Image 1 (spheres, rainbow, N blue to C red):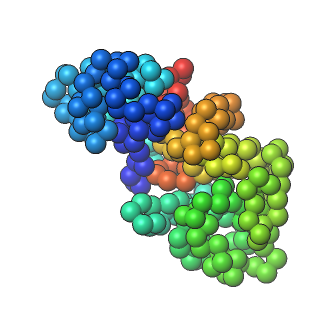
Image 2: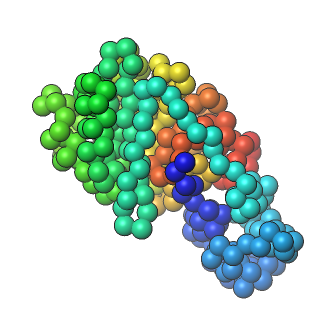
Amino acid sequence: MIPIEDFFEDILGKAMRGLSYTPDSLAQVTAVPIQTIQQLLQGQYDTRNPEHEAALRSLTEPLSLDPDKLVTSAKKEWLPKNADVEGLRQYNTPWHDMRVNAFLVWDPKTLIAAAFDTGTDASQILDTTNELGLNLQSIFITHTHGDHIADLPTLIHGASPAVSIYANRLECPAEASPFDEGTHFAIGNLSLRTFTTSGHSIGGTTYFIEGLEQPVAIVGDAMFAGSMGGGQISYAQALDNNRKKILTLPEPTLLCPGHGPISTIAEEKSHNPFFPEF
């Protein structure tokens, strides 16, 4: 199992930055001592100390986080179930002090395949296509942050000369053909729909794929298992897009994030602190 990308302290930090809270201003509106807030932001949480849980719960209201889900995150009591679906493979490669995902999706009947991002070592994707006899016809980019397209030249060079590269028109590198939100594609007999899920990046895109045993949503850094990407462009926009365009997908949908393990829409509704309404 690939480790969870964000711990409770990361969730706190992203919500504070998104809502323009400092430890001092958050202490003023919650009456939680600033020293306690700073300890929590450093990941210091003692499950034997009821004051830590009380403080963490007090911080959730101004940050619009779910208290029960955040405490579950702090106690490390949840991991998504392992996903094993024919026609989907995840690749997890190192990027400085973190790791990044790329995905390969293929139609088991026609063996036509598409790659989603590259990570830092696209040779693994090419190895799979050779091993399984897949026809890699397209490469889709979720967003253009360096960790996600670091090895695009290797993937292009190793694929068929006829491979097509696609990216959202709002964030399209020179190598790719642009598309607008709502564009449909096919991967053999599989259908693919595109949603602009910006907020972390200006043209961040979710690819929703139907035709495998379970629907698949490849979301880039819009969401992670139990968390979401930071709102580098707009925190409010990121939350709104996640609510309206990702969490409205069918609950069995596999959520394939840019970092961390695969989850599902149902699991995110139950465990993601950023969405207390579920």
